[in-house]
Picture 1 (cartoon, rainbow, N blue to C red):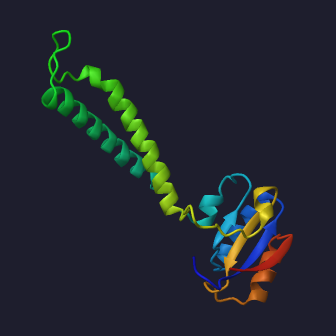
Picture 2 (tube, helix red, strand yellow; picture 1 turned 60 degrees about the horizontal axis):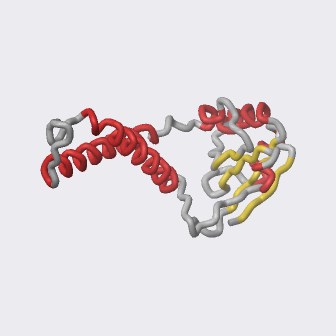
Length: 174
């Protein structure tokens, strides 16, 4: 996390006002650092210009890894390393392997997605997240604008936020 970062923080009471404010503020060329909301706001991702997540691709790759690893392990153990003939079946019969393969696929996919999410979101067990306003987890919507990444001054950004429905404007320094 970078030190000495200055932000203008706009507090919004209503999600519809927030959504329209994001659209208007981005039209004026202002780069919004992040918007925090106590609940999902439909259309906010599109308004902020976010692309679709690649987490499903990671989930598929982790799932395929789980499938291959489960099949390889079972075929190796029961077919070559310690072959046992059970009920006259082949050493490495595929149908009995299906439940274990399915469960291992789901397990590796879930663990992989959680780990990938933590890495991508920069959520370290020893770190502390930036908290722009404590009310963003309760009933307020918070828009954070990084002063260093915008050409407009602090006063101009404050005026733009106020004109677009912010009920409160604060300055936050990290």
